[in-house]
Length: 439
Image 1 (spheres, rainbow, N blue to C red):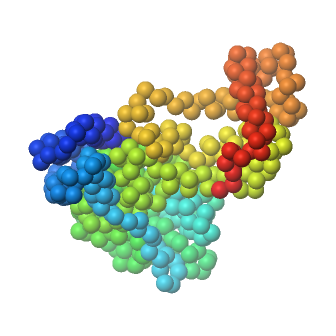
Image 2: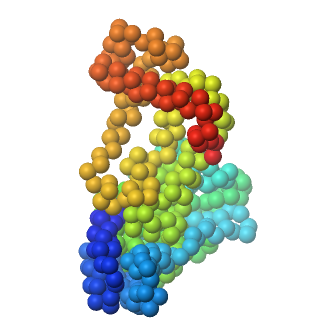
Image 3: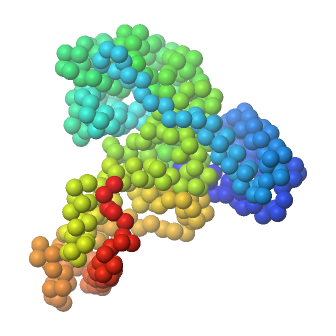
């Protein structure tokens, strides 16, 4: 989502680094360019002005101007200020002293509340909790049905009743949760296309009856400046406790999403990018600042790897590598783990130096992995374990079964053969240069 902002900031930084010595004049010129970039990215004008004033004040300090690397110092100041703008430190979820912890989701219609409810349930279940989803958007039967489908996918319970009122079902849900040993209750409330008295009155009543531990304002990252105005209105009327940014996989400019925290003073708790239940991350201001500035996000990349990689399988694979027994079955398992980490393009952007304009022109073909998977699936068990037996007729059969060509099958076999030779070569040196695969 922040690609355009990243690209333009990268251009400003390059000009800044091009100056052998920084002066008040070229720093001021750079600040004007950054201010324009922020405004073009839909950052609230007051937030942009405060941000630039703070950066300029620090950048004009004598320690920076007399530094050996003044341009790098200025970039570091911008990174620190951007982190401060986004919230300084990670904000955890507040827990109720007496279960259940009630989380109420609020926001306009179409902002992604129902999908987020399913993702939160999946997130808590992964933490060993027993969440309960509550369908209180009774004006839209489709929303109730959607939540029931998401609950089934996440493997959690859902409470729904089209014959009652939103306030009544939310109030009943808290009692139901205590009786059913549910320690987290997620209320999927109704939204409107715009803020009205009926909606606010309903949300206020739900808040009063359920006394939620957390109220998350769900902000659609695609809505631009209107998201800031909506957030302010919800803050005044409902006084939410945290923000969740959704649809960050879109192509909107993204600046409005950055402004909400600064304007409301409320912490960003989660970010959501994608439709899958796993596509939910705890928000870390410092990591997001690094991503926006094109510096990557290695910590999140490692955390995703830890979640995706089966440690026991990793140990077995390492032993196989040492014995030179790497097969297509092992390769297939590795592909599945990579897919579980998320889209390849997103993973590449988390690597330092791979953000901004570096990614321009680099097309990551996700379908290539699908074709490789299809080719391996078209092999017999014996062929996966002993690729050397795959002759001409077998290659034709694999190509037909996977919807690919014989040339693509040949390419896969050649690449796999090269991989085996590399492993064999490293084995001669005791695999000393090979990193351990268990995280």
